[in-house]
Length: 557
Image 1: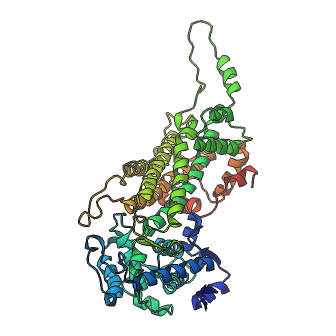
Image 2: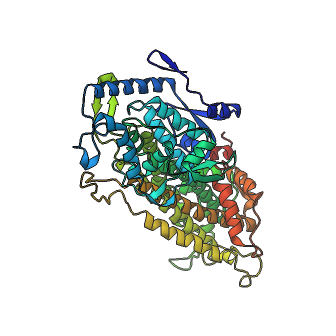
Image 3: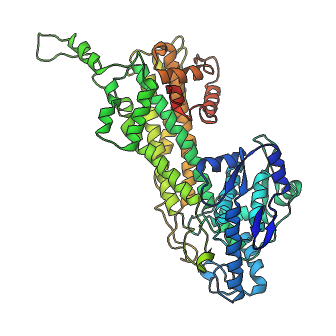
């Protein structure tokens, strides 16, 4: 129950009743606490949204103050002025609502493939969270309508191209706002399935029992003038990147097991002497995963094995014992360190942005201020997403090189050529599949180039420095999708290698993960289409919670 002034407002709608009956988890939006995981969960339909009563009281106060200021004849950007370089054109009171609708229609000018429906739904959730923070000056009716659309599984159709990420995601969010006013196209989630139906917004609103909302002053710009598209896309990127980091640690531990890697490369004392947080974290996790292994080579054993080959007949003798492992194994903590740290930096940026007031102007009723500024600018998100692309590219680099080592019989220390089961030459094993990892790694290297530095002045030079943050977020999302291909293949190659050797001597953590994955794994023998194995394991590795908590496999819940 929400109180606005002295009048109690009932905020529960029919759609709220429906999801409460299903005992669905509810995220209470308050503008301050929305997490990456919650954004993703709302988008995919695992959680619904509610509105914090304290937050709505702030919203009522902001709207009341804005109305008072308009009543006093104050000139407020985007309320009774036009927009951008036309802001010197003052709008009459009678046309203020028309102005908002005109803004939406004129800026709904995107093209390209639409954002995935679950991301578009998350865009709406992030926008709602920003508005409910209480500094945008919109009515409760708008907040309730966004809530009801989300909970009904209705998502806007948003073309992917169009945002420069400076005055927010104007084009993307204009397409989102079309749904609110019953125009454009929309998606409707089909029951509890992951399928979506596309139709006109008017038809879908009618199907779920909602009607188009007539916007009032400040509400068109309130919906559009923010960073919610790049933030929602970035949340999904971060969510996927965290899964990549975990699998990268698992695959590094598997490589140590397969090649009998030397233990001191992961020694705690070594990494304490170069204590980058990501490096220490990766080394500790890989060490925990292979703890108890019979396959790992101890440094003291290396000394003994080399000494036993000593030839006293000359000043030099050559050993066939590895003195050190290749960098893709030995230096995994150092290589992955900045990647791990970049992922967590990106997560912090995305969560900060998701819980920010980022439209213009902002209404600070407690201080009796209406502030004109630039919180809509997406430079922080752009830099974080560009850094994330660099991180993911490096994860691919080390993964692809380890895959190459597993397949090349000049490097793989006795494994079958191309990990062939049967007769090499007649059967090709993993030969063709390696092209997937190599080409996709190259593609991700190209996407590691930044876009957040590529500002182009636009909007009659009103927007003379722009962030390109939404392009950066889209690029990061694509890069992470590509990286899932690369690491899926490496995982299959490592499981195939463990089919040939060392599975019996795995450590506590590696054996637990191997046991889980082996239930779904069948050694590849050229008797089926390789693509089918890739599709199956990509889903297992990244569309489940199997590897979300690696400590569970190490005896540390």
